[in-house]
Length: 178
Image 1 (tube, rainbow, N blue to C red):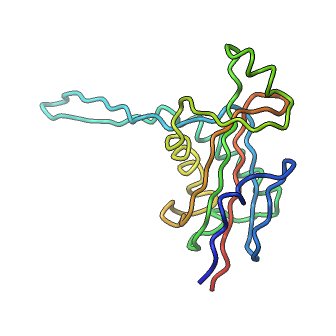
Image 2 (image 1 turned 120 degrees about the vertical axis):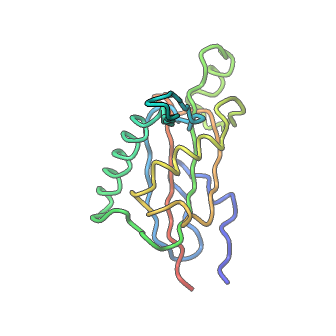
Image 3 (image 1 turned 180 degrees about the horizontal axis):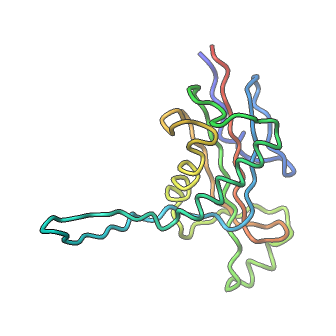
């Protein structure tokens, strides 16, 4: 039985992810810009030729596409040539969402911007909606289906590093087969 990586393994040390105590394949992605969340589906219904027609819209389709392209280009830069990277292996995902510090919190901006202090973000969007966005965006890029994901660790923080615009840091791992 393999040992689990403690949640403290999620934290980057000096901007670099800490390595787990065992050998595994790892890929790192950082997407600039404020983290996006997955909205609730919007649907529309109408009558056509006496039949009820329905359609569900994904309001974030363009954002998911650009997020996918950024992930794909960063994985290509790490030597990946075929997608999805792991069509059948189990995978683990660690995500840190860095949200832009709001301008309305002047004391927070002065205290945290440019400092080494970590500040958790407890405001909207909800972390589960942020995770859904990333998991949907990585489908077909890193894994064939998100049922392959066996562990997700995530945290929501305020961005205290320049340029303070927010970012999403992702560590994708393929645990060794035992």
